[in-house]
Length: 212
Length: 275
Image (cartoon, rainbow over all chains, first blue to last red; front, side, top):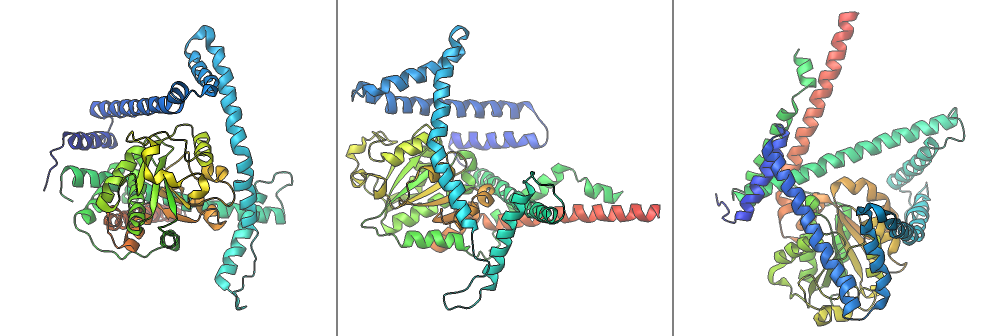
């Protein structure tokens, strides 16, 4: 057993145990470390934001003379007017600009990356053959399931036609596919949370107590 | 009575059993064999195919401390692979925790790399997708200094980068936004290849992008990191946790089976009692 002598490692270990004590029941120690965690996160975010403002705005403006940054800087400062009631309306201008900017820079790429590319990827052959002409059963089955699954889910969310007869069957198949997908997603969530718990165990029993 | 108890096991019992099941293999490894998935092999082969003389890799350090237990082993393994092959890399972060985690990755590389010549931590750029867009359009001039305060002009590695096409591969480790969606929207057609190391939770969401060819490779969570360590021949944090991960899954499956068996048994018992 090689217990760490670094006080910050001790703080980390005790903090982890304090936060996990919530699993038993809420208690003042948990509350204390929860507030410390939130405060530290915010402090870190403020410091990194300050560094970014200095590097990306102040230094280019004052040292390199990039006067075109004056307008974005003014818009950024106007965002803070929301904290002062008489002039809070001024913050709507830069907020609107940010919203428009966000839509503008993403919409072209969104059509390409998430609509066109994905649609093309769904158009796969149902009968797959190797380069020598032999039939590939596994890949063919995969492709059939994928195409039917895509169509089924689209049918499930298509409400312009009443879901009866063949449409109902297709929609039900789509629902089945979605349920399987949600199960897969849930399984991955469980796996991910276990990974995070393992990280905590490694930090407590390895880094702090030196047992692992 | 006991059927009802099995369906309503106190969650604290589950916590303790799960904790013990995870702790025991961490203290005494079992050595469960680990097979390598094609997705991890794809990333490994991609990096093996790079030319150390001409290719530069951008390592996107876009994961947070909260998700680092899942993604950090992958980042370390890939960084070691790049360093072993002598491939130059630049580390960029679009999340606040990124530069701090990049320094941890650099620490794990030790003497394999010369900072400034083989690898650099450029730091964090705020702005989400606008920041990603800015860096892709102006990779040479976006940062004026690196995370350690050294002017970019004094870093030999940055002299080889004029535009985004000088970067051959972007290997992006991420836990949320900005992430793969922002990169895919902003990367130009015919630009750098884009590979992703992502938290386990997000793997089902990103599989369509791997299948469509938009991702050059995918490392799925802690297991992806462990598999990469196997391929690299350098066991690390990922591999050390795989036994515990497997046992943890078995415990969860056991509880689900017990709960369902108890449920159906109690349903049957009720029907018999009525009938």
